[in-house]
Image (cartoon, rainbow, N blue to C red; front, side, top):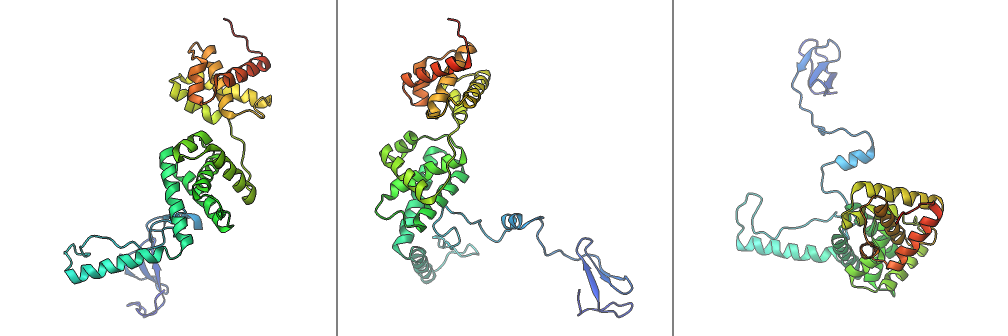
Length: 303
């Protein structure tokens, strides 16, 4: 409503702005003062606070992968103004000094420098493992929790970073093993496992067991196996889980044995060595899991 203008017909100052129709209407006589009222609100709709925050266009979204959560300002290094005119020497020197001090202010103390270094390492590992963005966000949040509880003191930053990315993969249901993370980070597998157990204990996080089915699609793609074989392997794993044959067994070994058995049943046979190399387990492991499944699922293989 507006109290400045008034209706030219009746002189009433109580005017109604209808943004749906774009009109200014007199509340007394209904006279339309203007039918081209611009809408200054957003062009998108939001039904709750979460959607409103996501669709707001007042800046980049916050992220846990940057030490300041992306809330700082970055001064560009180019010597051009907003009108694309080249700056003079005095102005360029002033911008250079501002950029230098702004970069120093962003990392004011040692804890922020260590956090920035750790998050950079997390991004590198995530890129090497080809993990989705939400896994990197989860790993960054886990590391921040560990840093807040002072779990980093006396321990290797690289070890906690590797454990955080492995824990994030477990929480998000992504098929990544300790061997893969150890290979990417160039760290000892035992050290990563030790840091992982320590973080899980101190943060009191519930980590669900790894489902062997998540490895089926990955292994079948590497072996070049048809889709029907992959479906049968998934059914075999589901039956094994129902019979509790996976308890105390490595998920990669169970997935490899199920895939090996499915390849025999569909005639798209792969050797135990091929399956073991893809799953990064020994042939003995594949053979033992294969024997357990055959014995308990009553599957007959005709040689």
